[in-house]
Every structure is written in structure tokens, then in C-alpha cells.
Amino acid sequence: MKSSKEDIMNRFTGGIFLENIEWFDQTGNELVHRLPENGSGEIKFGAQLTVRESQAAVLFYKGKACDCFGPGRHTLKTANLPLLTKLLSIPWRGDSPLRAEVYIVNLKFFPNLTWGTQNPVAFRDEELGLIRLRAHGLYTMQVVQPVLFINSLVGTMGKMDTDGISGYLKQVIVSRFNDYLGQTLDTIFNLPGKFDELSDELQKRLTEDFSFFGLSLSQLYITSITPPDEVQKAIDDRSRMGVINDMGKFMQLKAAMAMEKAAETQGEAGAGLGLGLGMMLPSFFAMKQAVPEAPPDKRENGGEKVSCPDCSHAIPADSRFCPKCGHQLLQLVRCIDCGKNLTPKARFCSQCGRMTEQKKEPKICPQCGVENLYNSIFCNECGQRLG
Image (cartoon, rainbow, N blue to C red; front, top):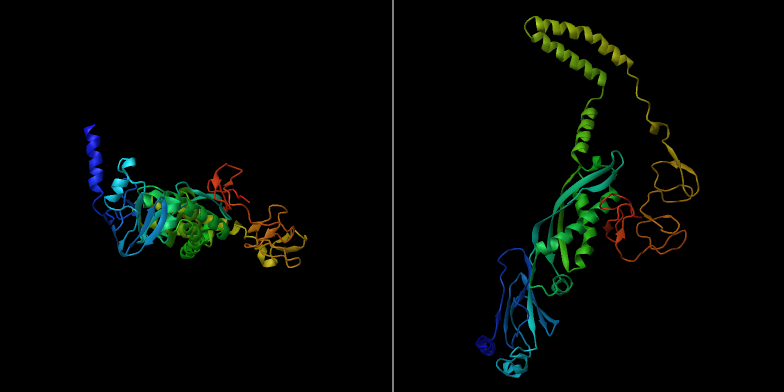
């Protein structure tokens, strides 16, 4: 009983003095910090708030965000008057019902934030088939709308750092990366020299996702896109085969080098080995003569032909549009009713007139059941096209 009386007395005596509110980020990765730290308080009329150049402060009074402050010293105005409010709050055991708190937001850039695929994402390569890729990179983030950020992500938490939201942001980046890669890249053999282009376009697609929470994605880099070890080995083998233009001459060269090395070997063993290779050399020449020439490329005779799915007119396989009816062959967006291929930003189907914009609900992959973002085109888990 005595301790409760002392507690009440401390509350009354504490209501005499004004607050001096300021905050320093000691960790270097804290986005938002609330004062008082233990929850809302009785911030009194005339309390002083000091905001640094790299900060912004938001005053919540009576449960609402009533003002936002930039750099400088500010005088806070509430209905909590020193000592008088304490006397009026006796029915509430000395706690004023006029609650107030200040959220200080760190506006600096947060660089060197990493993103990457926790599990390999599926990618349909035109030359290698279905493969799984791992991707990693860096991004830089900044809070640009403090009130929106607090109301949408922070809520009533006492503080939030970059670790608190990096998990969600990584999932968004990987999902957009998977969609963009499936739309623009046909094979991973075309990756060299495209990292800057991929990074810039991916950053543009993520701008809206970040701004929804009051954040800005100022920089994004793709540092690596790597296939599995077995695919890398196949690529290395293909590179070695590409260097060798004439297999017959290559085998002859190898045989001649072996004979030269054997001739340098002293003793009867070296002489015998050289004699054996000399007897094998005619067979290498015979193999060279027996190797048939590769068939001519079909593209030299006009290229392969396919039928237009709309008018059945024969057109080159690499055409993007049918020259007869104008049907778009490169599928970017397909009408969910009639299956007509549409242009990327079409709002209505040119064939049946159906509106293409759908409700922003998560897409469930019909093959593996994994939930994807509402505008995902490929499944992050199995690579299945979602429509």
C-alpha cells in the first residue's frame, strides 16, 4: 500500500516540469523511434522538441497524428498544463487522459541493404529448358513520407529498424525480378552486359511498391544471377566446344602433340609409344573424312514457317505480328475470356471487349499452390505461368 502511495506522489511531482524531447540513433539502422519509449505520456503544453537535419517528427495527440515537424526546435502545444492537469486528473489516479507521443523518423539513406532468392526461382530458358536461378543484389532505401510510413507499417510499435521490414521488401523485389526476367530474357546466355539494364528496369517497377508505404527506392543493383552447378558445367562445356571449330583438325593436333611428347621421352617405352601413335594417325585422318558435313541452316532458305492463330496465314517463325491480319504473336498479356494476345498496357480486349484490369488479389499457382503477388506472371516456386 505504501508503494502505491509513493507512485501516485511521483506522478504528481513529475507533472510540474516540462519535457525536452530529442533522439539520437545509436545503432545506425533504426527507422522510427517513439518517445516516451514506454508508451504514450502526458507531454505538456510548452514541451520542447529538437529535430535534427536528418530527421522528421510526428506528434500524435489524442490518438491522431496532429502535426509533423522538420529540422529545428519546436514548442509543442497540448492541453496538458503543468500541475493543473495533475489536479484535474485525480479521478484517473493522476494519469491525464490527454495522451500524447512523438515519433521521430530517420530520413537518411539506408545503403547496402541486401536482397536475394532464398530458394532458386524457376526460369524457362529457350536453349536449356526449365532451370532454377539464384540472384542477389543491393538496394538503398529512404523514408520520404513519415506519416504514411508510421500509419501503414510502424503502427503503435516503439521502434522499427531495417531488419523489421527487409524480409517483406526482399520478397517484393524477388517477385518483381522473376516476372521481369521471364518477360525480357530468353536465355541466360544473353545475360552478360545486361545487368545495368535489368537493374534500372527492375527499380522502375518497384517504385510503386515502395511508395505505397512511404518509402523511396533510390538505388538497386543486381550483383549476380547464377544457375545451378550442373547448368554451369554444361555452359562451360558448350563454351569449350564453341572454341573448337573443326573437331577433326583438333584431334589431329592432339595426336601430333602426343607423338612429339612421346618422341622426347627417353628409352624404349617412349619409342614404343611413339610408334603406336604413328600407327593410329591414319585412323584419325579417316575419321576426319568420314565426318559428314552439318546440314545447312534452315534460315538460309527463307526460315521456318508457322501459322497465324487468327487467320492461319503462313508467316516466319520469328515474326511479332501477322502481316495479313495484324495479330500480335508475342504474348505479353492474354484476355482471360477469349485468349486474345493484347498489348502490354491494353485496358480492354480488342476482340471481345472485356476489361483487362483485375482486382488486386494474390494469385494462387494452380500447379504448386504457392501465393504470388496480384500482378505476378510467373510462379516464384515452380515457374508456372499464371495467366
